[in-house]
Length: 386
Ligand SMILES: Cc1cc2nc3c(=O)[nH]c(=O)nc-3n(C[C@H](O)[C@H](O)[C@H](O)COP(=O)(O)OP(=O)(O)OC[C@H]3O[C@@H](n4cnc5c(N)ncnc54)[C@H](O)[C@@H]3O)c2cc1C
Image 1 (tube, rainbow, N blue to C red):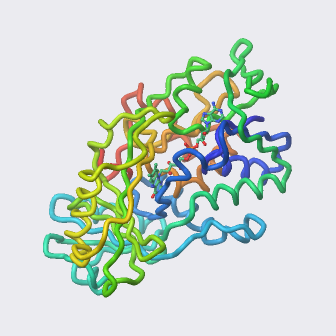
Image 2 (image 1 turned 45 degrees about the horizontal axis):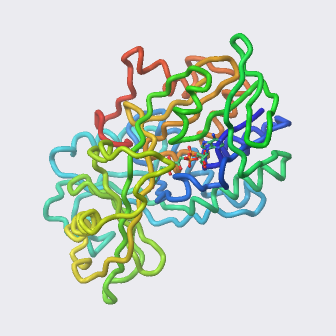
């Protein structure tokens, strides 16, 4: 059994396969663990989703992050509970309320609040242009590299072999079945392969004639230092009016990322893209953040960088065995795969071990949904990542 890709998805899958007692699992990673988008992730673990499947997945994932040490033999995900606020105006108010109702029905601790209540939770907020908000007290963010190392370390303890600096160059089939992978260190015979290569997964799919519809685009992150008189912890904030998300960052900083579907047009080659931000990109993000947190007008630009998203047509992943037999895909996480990774690893391991039925949550993520004209649509329609 070979897992290709040493990000959050691949290592979580390795961990969950090993937990099921599956032997002879090998994970191959062309560079080093978390060297891809996982290592650049903002790693926000919010619960705000608007389909039943994603709500169930993210709740399961949050519970895993909360017990990460216990479940991985004392390792840490660096999970910091901050709470999560989301602010909207009238354009998305109804959708937000419907999403929260769905989340509550799935057991997520989320509630609709007034903008004034949001400011009681986070007094630095400007709320004049918000008409409603919601709050999740349990949400937080993690450390993506530590999480990946934690999954990998625990998987190793259970017998998984992890080969870094080992690139898969071909996947061999015989008839309709996987038989081996060719790697930069030689072939590995196997009847089962998991493609967990994120922004590279389309290339891996093409090795066996499977077309995974993925667009790779740049995602920008800017950071600012709070002015001295406004420092202190704050909840993660998703702002559907200025279209940004923020979370605290060590060193008295705030991390700011965009929620702009236009990012999709900033296409990127995951092996060669512009990793830095120019001044316009940085000031655009930070000025939007200062609209919501006016104290940041007196802050200082700290730094910026970009990573890549693997975006599918409906901004939801593919978790499937689309053919040939034994070729599994867990990819296309469209900018929200970190928070889901504990649940995705469990679902992918179950898919590999037990196969699939239409009753499983994994059915929603089948590749064929695009050809069937049945993309995943939540309360927000095609709004990003929810
Ligand atoms: C800047 C940024 C911020 C983000 N913020 C959040 C957030 O706040 N919350 C959230 O939930 N998600 C967030 N995401 C998305 C999330 O990080 C990703 O969805 C998730 O990390 C993807 O993990 P993965 O393991 O599927 O893929 P990856 O991290 O891309 O891992 C794939 C691995 O496969 C390896 N690989 C590729 N080809 C081969 C090959 N031929 N042979 C061997 N190995 C190969 C790569 O080297 C790579 O390490 C963010 C992403 C970025 C870029």
